[in-house]
Amino acid sequence: MNLVTLVLLLSALFSLTLMEVVNNFDKSKCAEFFIRSPNKKTIITPTVFKGYQYKMICQRWKNKYQFATLFDTERRIPVYSAYKFFGQKETMNLSLSENIRTEEWKNEPQ
Image 1 (cartoon, rainbow, N blue to C red):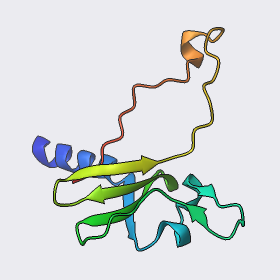
Image 2: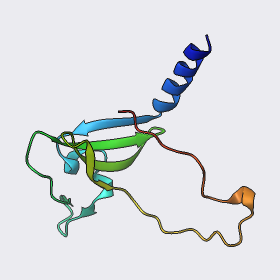
Image 3: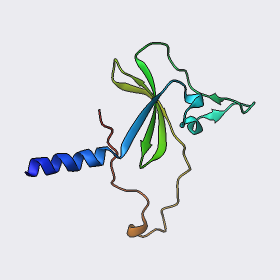
């Protein structure tokens, strides 16, 4: 019984992280993670290598897109990931209860 409970709990936690394979970062929901070109019609993405093993993935956490990743399925490694960086928040004057860094881990199901 305990094993079933553990499996259900873990599957619920992993379901918070979702991914979507897309054909083009420019026309996807994760285009916001890339710089717009000067003409504002397209985005500037790093190189997307040719080959069946490279997949463009938009990753969600709690129903919000967080990362755009180019993934190599043969080597099972991310080639690169893109995200928005909002700058470092000042933590010098925060109490321990207000600290913005958390111990929360985000696991991606394989």
